Image 1: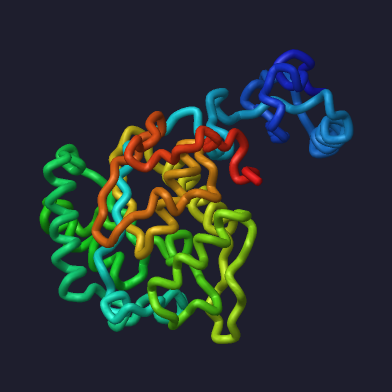
Image 2: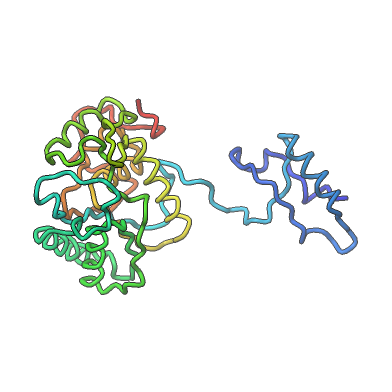
Amino acid sequence: MLSSSPAVTTAAHRPPSSETYQVPLNSLSSSQIITRRDLFKTLSVCIATPSLSVSTVAPANARGLFQMPPLRLSNRYYLVRAGESDYESLGIINTNPVAKTSVDSGLSDKGKKQTVRAAIQLKEMGACDRSCWLWPSITQRAYQAAEIIAAINGVSRSYIVPEYSFLDARGLGAYEGRKLDSISEVYALDSISMKTKPPPISDGTPNESVSDVFVRVTQLMSILETQYSEDTIVIVSPDSDNLSVLQAGIQGLDLRRHSELYFGPGEVRLLDANSIPVYKQPASAVYKCTNPPNCD
């Protein structure tokens, strides 16, 4: 049989969200023999009885799932929007992920200059003085921006970690191919509800709501906060919405108003979980979102 002291604990001794069922076999003495049948019976009892669980072999301080807004951040984060793309230089919305690695989706000449300025700003801010990790979207313009940032800040290419899906530009559905200034119509929809999606289109371009983007960037932060500790990470996005939704989520702001945190091409920001940007604060005091993404 299992020892009754270390092997079985009550739910009161662990966080309510924990639902792990693991056995510390190394806690059994040499005289205590456990069979497959004994183990199965013990696990069955623990699973069937909510008040019981089997002790975990994982460290007691193991991190749980990442939540927005977080109690704290384990790393220091800089948010960078890549410079203007060739499509943006033509005043055209281009968000279809099929073309994200195409050279046609790369930085324009103006975008390269904007990115150089962003890289210099990061250097002046001391972002990579003690080394840093660059996490760009695999989107052509974002990865090009990361390479420029790495070159100017003396960061080895081995510290560039391409992100393949969570940092894709927000899919704008039927707005694909329209003029850039029509993005204001999307933001008007966002301000009504974070669950409203742009109209769909049949060419494969996703039509993502603010809530959809929020899920993606939360998953990204969960990976970063788990994989690194006390490091500096530069997140490079091809568009503004990934970054504005991420910043709003981290700071507990109303996600419907994420566009008030808009990032211009080549803009750099230190992500401070404890500070709401004064220059972007709305007149209304009703801005906090205590349980994102449920801000409706």
